[in-house]
Length: 259
Image (cartoon, rainbow, N blue to C red; front, side, top):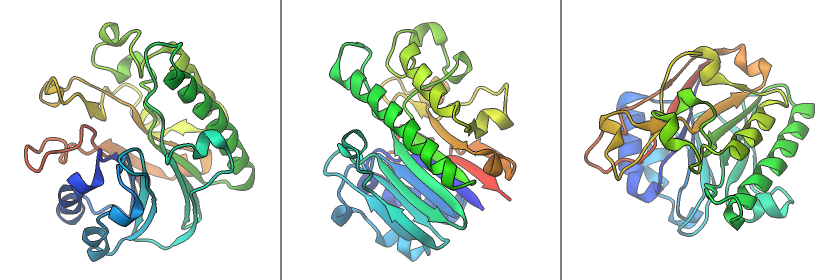
């Protein structure tokens, strides 16, 4: 079973490219997307349904939004979490598929100024998310938390640590929150499989960083031990990111293979 996380940076702008990737290059079984930038009514479902995917969507007008496309039956969908921080914006969707509980996350971007409300929101989001996942793990063995976490955890996860020091996405306060999430019993699957590999999932449009591999690793597949032991491989698929037309997302999908 192949599962992927992909910040698409506007699904309506990328649907053609993503559908082509799924059909011709990497037909994953489960695709979890973030930053849809549209409500469910505007989501271009047809290209995915033609390929045999079922869709679960938690969309928001112009901003945020998450979705799951699955070739396997989706048994349960949750889009409201009874918490003001988690429900304030459309950043989470939970699905149950083939015995796995999958939480698709689009974490807030935050702000480098740690006195800014956007930074406080990101910190609060991580705190509540961690508690929620902790609760899931008391009920389910196979839990996967994936998505755009908007944090690069270690120096190896950015192309130039000195350049990123003090920047949003690489603040020590943000790293502490992601480490706290990992600390409840989740493993970073990519780093587990590739402990010394420098690989990125995001590159700045403005600097054409993809062509010099000047990026950050901010997209993750985190999982409980019962999932990690089934993870055979995990890799960043650069095919969509290296397109000139149609215009690609600034992220690339991270794809994991589970036996």
